[in-house]
Amino acid sequence: MKLALLGGGGFRTPVVYRAIACGQTRTQYDELVLYDVDPARLERIEAVLQGIDEATGSHVPHRTTTRLEEAVDGADVVYCAVRVGGLAGRLVDETVAIEAGVIGQETAGAGGIGFALRTVPVVTEISRVVERRAPNALFINFTNPVGLVTEAIRRVLGERVVGICDAPEDLCRRVARALGRAPEELWFDYFGINHLGWLRGVLHENRDLLPGLLADPERVGSIEEGQLFGPDWLRSAGMIPNEYLYYYYFEHEALEAMRGGHVRAAYLGAQQDAFYQAAGTPGETLALWERTLAERESKYMEEAWEGRDEEREAIVAGREPGGYGGLALGLVDALHADGHAVRILNVANRSSLPFLDADAVVEVPCVVGRGGIVPVAIGEVPIEAQGLILQVRAAERAAIDAALSGSRQLAIRALALHPLVPSVELATRILDGYIARQPELREALR
Image (cartoon, rainbow, N blue to C red):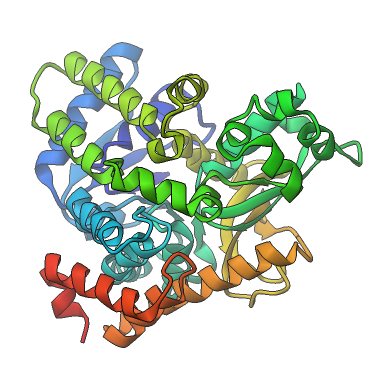
């Protein structure tokens, strides 16, 4: 089986490689190809992979290339994790928004729309190459904003596309631990779209354990979301939100922290520059990569923990970095195994959330097996969640249309529709800021 990793020079590629090298997947990969537009980044990541080989005593046959056609030709699985514009582009997405007085974050609000305007044309062209060169490939998308990008790629590749995000399953594992049970014993009633979802039930032997957890301040306070949102708010909501709901429920606090200097892209840019510019043996490079990964995990969503350093340190200690690599490989295993597995994935709605159309990409539990990936029926959800999902999906769909048509007016519409952008005037100012600092957008939008 051939696996093509697009964005193979990216910092998280070794997570996927190590999972395969350490035998964490049942699927046997005969060929692993790493593709990236930057040969220097590929070379640096290759040194990390050599360090993993030395440390584990194993080796996964692989090669690197800067030619997309060569990477995907005849692939069985295409894993896409590209960052169009690099971290410099993300820094513009975030800082322009913050300067305009709104949330500056990679996937939430204006930043996510800005990222999409750059990304959708590129991933659409990638999907066309995959359509020609790997007509039977499963396309696993991790490129942000995941739900939006997955829906754009589906316009070319249809049912062969699935989006993944580790946040929902990480939430479910934390809740299982707080309940003193293994995740495999439980059914997690999770619904939403990417980075906008809620856990509304945890079933064991047809009994919902979530109300009891929410009623216990000590137990619910032991999980990251309990500390992030507070037990009182979770009890009031009757659900546990995905961590990215912090930007909606605590918009003012998050923005103030960002204004105070907590800009994720600035931190990651400086950190990754230091890693990619360093030199050393494969073992030294692996050690530096591991330290850098641990440091970046410790700063994840730092703006949400302003003034709560001890709580943040405890949360960081319990995190499992790079979980999406195992999620992607586990998905492939489940598709080729007997029986069925359940995964929370980003797929076409069909009729899972009845208030959305069939083609809208949703993030819900799916039954996975040799027959494919089938989203479960979620049914009606609380009206406040429904309203927020509809607003964000409308903004995301407008962003797809704007990116593919090159329409400036649609781009403004996408920004103005988003609930984290409060006015059309502000949306226009933000788009002008993106265009001023990213000349390629000036050429793309008219």
